Image 1 (cartoon, rainbow, N blue to C red):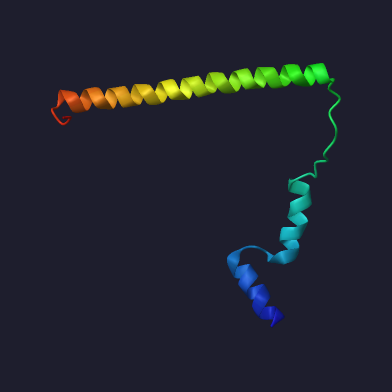
Image 2: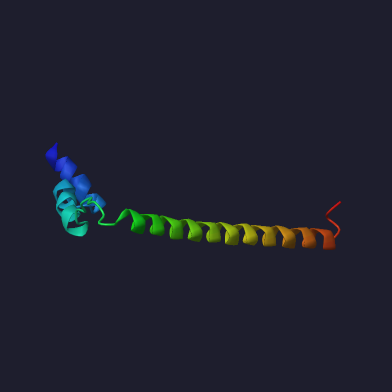
Length: 83
């Protein structure tokens, strides 16, 4: 049975399970979770800035959606497809 499995792996081009396992650690280094060295004031400032950027992106996305909607309404009204 082992010859059949190796033939199937070779046919797939995978090179077997051992080759897949040996490629993993070299390609993706293990990252460790560590605590940040931020003071509470720095963390609060970072969160405040990030919140501001998020609201700015929300406004830009909402504006883009409204623009697309307005263009669609104008085009539909222009060609008599609306009301």
